Length: 71
Image (cartoon, rainbow, N blue to C red; front, side):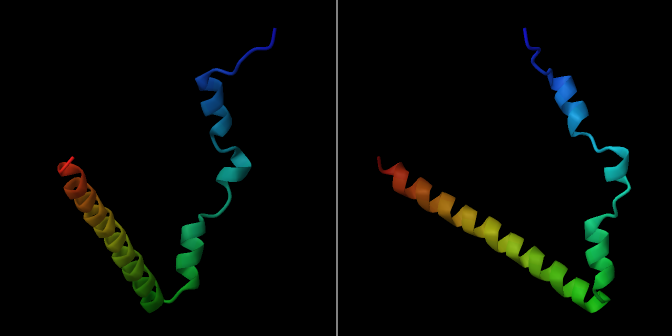
């Protein structure tokens, strides 16, 4: 009878191995590849894109509530 993996074995299988842990941090590599001005510009753009995304979700949620309130 085949044995089904438990959640503990699934968690253990998803943990990084020693070779994966020794790989460099990708975010750090990208930060080091950019100048300070470029990094600030990229971070600022990502921040404003995040705000725009959250704002659009809020607006769509409010519109959906208004449309469903009459039902």
